[in-house]
Image 1 (spheres, one colour):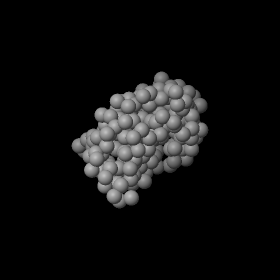
Image 2 (image 1 turned 120 degrees about the horizontal axis):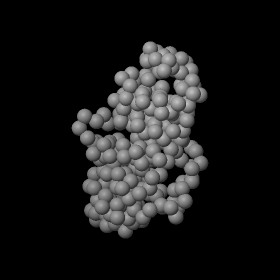
Image 3 (image 1 turned 120 degrees about the vertical axis):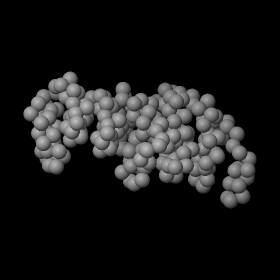
Image 4 (image 1 turned 90 degrees about the horizontal axis):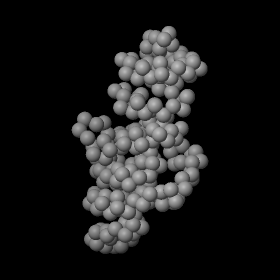
Length: 231
């Protein structure tokens, strides 16, 4: 309890003191006790508890994905993706839906730090690997309010789906996914790719066209004609 009090009193001012508290909580390994602090009014306490759970490789870091404090949310995203916490990956993957829909009052990605977090949401959908995840990525790629670079990353994930690179693109870790374990996403591609074509140009259009050819989806003739003309 005293370590929790110190985290609150410190209020993230001294990062070394916070680290010492996290180390102490990790050493005590009283998980059920610290999980009671998930809704603590202090963001500093919640962050400290999250970091301790990360050190314990505990997938319940997912409880912080909807935290009121953005810094805490971002640490939860990093923990799940970077440690490849398999039982928490579906929860992380679901976070992309709000961005794909550009929900009202949602702060859209605006800087490099945001983009790093977004690539982890994309990666979570890629690694979970279901039809719904492919649909999430296609909806994300079709969202014009998102940066083109991130929309491209979502399409790169679809393009790589059948033959995944063994190296995790977000952190360089060796995390092979067996090609035979990848679900057939043809239905999701056929349903979601038309919306991508409707809002694509440049490199996005080229990526969408390659995906269409791979999955047997008809691409708009006028767009293909324009690509041939430009080339």
